[in-house]
Length: 507
Image (cartoon, rainbow, N blue to C red; front, side, top):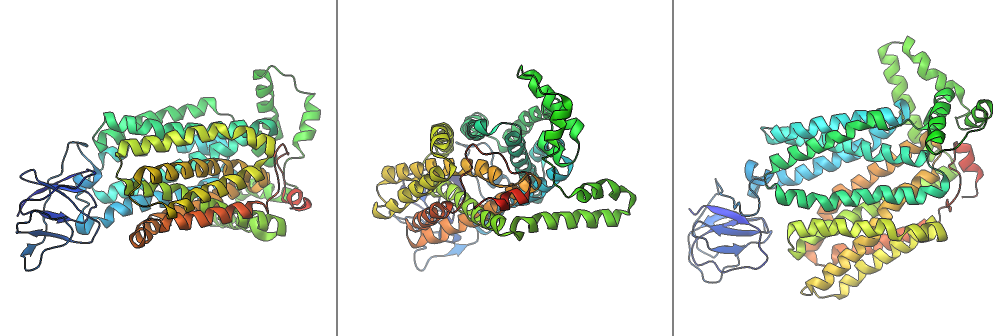
């Protein structure tokens, strides 16, 4: 039996002696240094034969085979990976897919749960909790001893990261004036792309997954500074009838900006207009401490269910939410689908991730002007349709034209990245204060469902035809663009405070 080492390569080579055949879609090197490129066909066996032209995924007839029981992995690119340490190959390959699924599941749960917790306990409080926890869990993930431990911590990290992304974005949108929301929202997304761009450089320098995980965890401790730097959202404080605290923060903001507020009585009168008119709901939260633990839990569950029902109870809110749910699903599916499709190009992994981040940076800047000049709705419609057009064109491009397809995929990702960033801003402006975080969290949760489904779409449909996944994504993008026209324009408008304000508008 030949031992085998995995190595990522782009060109197949001939195998001149017996070797191991794995269903990895990668290149294998036997113990004598002879390589062959394998496919993704589900086979895992060792053969004893000789062949001058073996492509590596079909066993010659009348040959003896035996099950694989050990592997020696090539360390020319990475010193250590999760795959090599836990042998996530052949019949254990599904376990690597489960790692990705666990992360997406964590994002899904975190998008919903953390949004509701921040609506109840505050934006700043939950941001600080998530920041501290993600640093601790991130560092701990570098010292796991079993696959199950890593799977669990991976889920928790994703849950906390989802909370940080959703809550911090909502907080930022709630403290800036309408004219600044476009620039602020796109700048926020730009830093996300910057992180993607820097990650492959960090991975290039640190080739061990444990050391890389530990380094990222240490860097995450910088987020704990939120405790001293981050103010609470005045809008959230007002919605909780904590008017004096909201006034104090507004004074600090005015002092920082070199401005002077009107008299306190006048400001408090304005603040009082922001909270929900249902005062008994606010009082229920404070009086709940007198009840039993079970009754408090039931009240929390009831409140959570009521918040979700509020999103679809009334006709205008229902139309806005259902369309937004579909838009988020499509944007996330296409966004990650294009990332996964890049694996078919066989490009360098560092270059692939780096180009993915580079594409995101200009999209966060170039569309600031059209967002303000032409509005959210036409810009978002144009981006969806442009992305869909790029992906539909791939159907007419031969598979051998790798660079043409690479360009179209990246161009499509450029447009869908802008949509991915814009939809946060658009959703914040569409929803009232009371359920804004819940709405964004629910949309993000639905988007994560698309993220979980997307790898199967790319893999299964890609086996049928190279351009089938991109064609499906293109059709979905064009459909989403047309549905966007049914949403109202929110450019330079005040954020709605209550559901009643939303229902009073024409759309």
